[in-house]
Image (cartoon, rainbow, N blue to C red; front, top):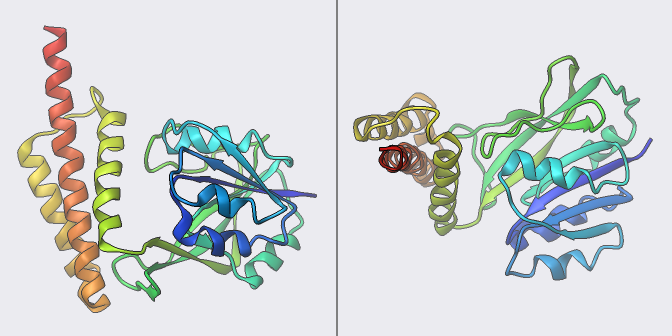
Length: 251
């Protein structure tokens, strides 16, 4: 039973080569490119098992569902362009007796550059292998997830690696992008205020750096905690602004 790997990407060249190199044992890899301006497309052409598809980004959940439609197989292993599988998890996946009423979760280890982050992020268990005829991603623009209603969840034994940030500048860029997507997804649906934005951001820093002991991750822990604070502040202040603008239009 075949498995297609599906990846959505925009300017993922920094880790993409390592990602695709780890997927050589899969016969079908769909790389759904959302307007990259770096060497993403060039890297993709180096792999005979990779099909490069150009498509619009319409939010993380909807875009991942659209990308899965191009897969050659119904079983989908959903990855990000900054994630890398090792041999152990590849072999475990290839040897599975797949059940269409089951989705499979994997343990993901998170890194800043090449340093594993044990406290701010830690390892997280995330569903990534599913049958597209049975389920798919939620329609959320951010914080998307594979729907698990009516199916069983089985945890795999081995883990894979996630390299989301290679520089401080990437924290800044992603904070702006994700906060805008959050606000756009929630405008008119939930309330916000400058006070809420301030205290939500403040608590995010306290939770990450103190409660989760992010200070034990060294200077990277401080960067991550501050980024969480900034991202959450901008999420709610952008939402406040968008709600106010929408209200004006209805008057």
